[in-house]
Amino acid sequence: MTTPTTLDPRQASARLHELTVIDVRTPGEYAGGHLPGALNIPLDQLDRALPDIRRAAERGEVLVVCASGARSENACRTLARNGIHTATLAGGTGAWAAQGHDLDHPAARDTRATWAMERQVRLTAGSVVLLGLALGEFVHPAFRLLSAGIAGGLVFSAVTNTCGMAAMLAKLPHNRPRKGDLDATLARLRGN
Image (tube, rainbow, N blue to C red):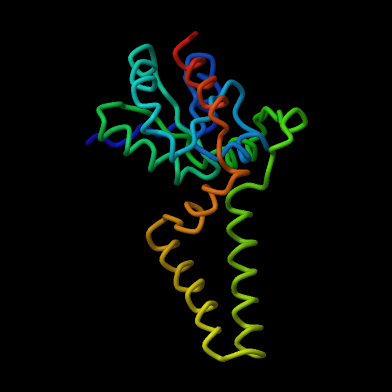
């Protein structure tokens, strides 16, 4: 399996007109701001889009992006296992914006815009920790295990550079693409 090419934001910006950009974040994150011209194919929908991504890669280079680069690297590995060579954006849309490059913000047109996944994870993890501590204090000490479980999950997430909580949150309705949205994206990827 080949290692995906990594482009820094400056390189990607200079070549943006010749790249097919696929954003693997949730629809809500995508609506909050994405690289100009990026197509939203959430990471958990990648398998459905494989034939169309393969055809796009045959026409030219495909750049896969996410918020920080972790999900896009995961997507690139999945695509490489399926014989599709892609590039990833170093540092994701966060690094892109930090270097002063513009993000397209259709959120004003899309009422489904939500928080970034990392922010959703912080809110959920913090809430469950506080709940575990409160229930452990006022109901039964065993509820403190909720807080310990979240702490263990965060450590595991940092060590493996994965996030099970993000994977679960991505399945919530506000983070899911509407069928028509994904179909329209795949049609654009095909050039229809």
